[in-house]
Image (cartoon, rainbow, N blue to C red):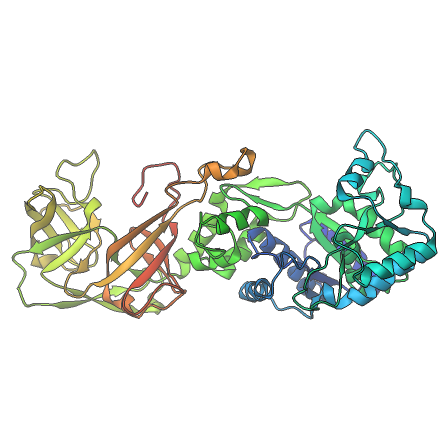
Amino acid sequence: MTEQDPTPVDFVRQEVVADTDSSRYDGRVVTRFPPEPNGYLHIGHAKSICLNFGVAAEYSGTCNLRFDDTNPEKESVDYMKAIERDVQWLGFEWTKLRHASEYFEKLYGYAVELIRGGNAYVDSLSAEQIREYRGNLTEPGRESPDRLRSMEENLELFRRMRDGEFEDGAYVLRARIDMASGNINMRDPVLYRIRNIHHQRTGNLWNLYPMYDFTHCISDALEGITHSLCTLEFEDHRPLYDWILNQLDVPCHPQQIEFARLSLEYTVMSKRKLNLLVTEGHVSGWDDPRVPTIAGLRRAGFTPASIRGFCERIGVTKKDAWIEMGVLENVIRDDLNQNAPRAMAVLRPLKILIENYPEEQVEDLKLPNHPQKPELGTRKVPFGRTLFIEQDDFAEVPPPKFKRLIPGGEVRLRGAYVIRCEEVIRDSNGEINLLRCTYDADTLGRKPEGRKVKGVVHWVSEQHAVDGEIRLYDRLFSVPNPESMNDFREALNPDSLKVLDQCKLEPSLAKAVGGERYQFERTGYFCVDAIDSSEQKKVFNRTVTLRDSWGKTARGR
């Protein structure tokens, strides 16, 4: 920050500025993003990523990426790789890559230090008994019968826990604090538990693993973190964070600052629930464009800039609030409207024959790649005698204010000629399979004389069309807050995905590669699916409609 910069806009940055101005931590700013590698990152994590890396960058500091890998039963190296990929895709680079497992030996040593200081003990109560003894918000807890073990016995039992002499659940290590505390987190919390399980990085070296509350604060201190930024659910854990560090000889005592987590309507953020959606087959995987993971958003066509812009728009507050899905959709809409090249794609083809157009003639029309950005140039779009238009762009009995093609009516083809529908041809089942039309040869780039044509429709030449599959993704849930239901899966939207596999694309899209984004004129914004698309068949995922049409009857729903 410079002297000309305005006062920081949120309370987190205000506290950071106050600390740097007072030379707390010698003026250093060191943050970290500490995900558990038990699933993919989602849009809520993006908010934390942008905040932690953003604060570090703004105040000439550093930011670490640290994996909280203390629960190997649910974690994997694959999740770690996915997290690294997502952080980098968002546009951030960490100063150091760390794992909590790197500190297992030091953490064990600090636990021994707590035991020697009379601040921790080995307990044989079961998890159920510990919950029972803990009490509740109106009643104090009861002390465990093992709370008065001698230091020597605690040290010996803790050593044997490490050596793998006991079964899972036989013992835990607990902090000795205050069973009558008004903060239940301070009622002798568990610091270590026995888990005889292989760890993805340390193998079978350890038979007991530290709990998050013990690991996190010490890891912060060992890395010299100055500002430990976390979401509001950890506010009640802050006294424990500080208590643990106050009992130990650690190199640094970071300041924990809590901010409101991101709750986005029409989706769920819980990794457990997202995992259920994946494992039960409600979605195709962690990168399904309908789930709010960063991988899913990327596959849907969201840009890193749009996600960073969304996080900036919602800001950093101290109060949890629900964010409307429309806010996220509008951010990517604005981004792609400015930056996505245009193309034409017919989702539900209806064939038209222009009878008075020369049978063998093909014209290469020049259409702009972006109407507001001439610097992006033009593309050639072939025009011939037989074309495809959208089924929805023709109506035999038009509704009020219908401005597209009707029997005997005229419409302009985008960037081409005005055509008139002369006859409707049906198949043996009575379904419309062809429109016989004529065109006005004097209307290429000019208005027809003596009449006004209001409608404009997009089209693709039959002879040159590229076959494509288009996936119309919509909101995964049909209610704003699915987590308010007894079973969130009951709110799944049955129309969250429609697959159209007979689509016709303009030939320029034959060269489209995975991840490229386009505005399909008059239809929406789409992204080439980087996994399923091939040279033989292009697959496009809908990112967002041209305008917010949720809850309304709209094309593609």
